[in-house]
Length: 186
Image (cartoon, rainbow, N blue to C red; front, side, top):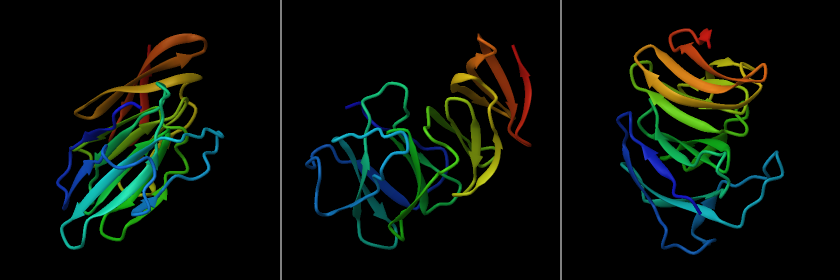
C-alpha cells in the first residue's frame, strides 16, 4: 500500500496521524469507503486518527489504493475544523468535529490534488477535469479541458499548471486561480 501524505497549507484546529498499526478493519473506526463508481474495490484501508480541539479523538477509515494513477492525500482546508481526504481516487470533505464526510461527487476519480493558500482553494483533477473547492461545494470547475491523464503539476501565485493529453498530444495547461479560466495550453 502506498503511503498517504499530508498537505498542511491552512491553519487547522485538529491534529491527525495515519495509524499504520491498526488492523485492516477496526470496529472502532468510522468507515467512509463507499462502493466506488468505477467498481474499484480494495481490501486495504487508510486509518486516520483525528484529534479534534473540542472533542474526543476518533478513527476514520478510507479505502486505499495501490494504483499509481490515483492520489492518496490528506489536505488541510480553509475551514479550520475540516479536512479533505483523497483515497483510492475518491475525495471526502471531512468535518473533524462532527465526524462526518461528504463525497466530492464532481471529482471522480481524483488523479492529483493541491492547495492554494493565497486563494483559499483546494484543487483536484480527474482524468479530464479540474475542480476547485473552498468547502464541500465546488467554487469553480473546468470540465473536459484534457482528453486523458490530467495532473496538477504546480500551483504558484495566481496560476496552476497541469499536464495532460489534449487532441492526442501531451500538453501543459495554465489555469487562472482567481476565476477558474483556462489561460493557455501548449
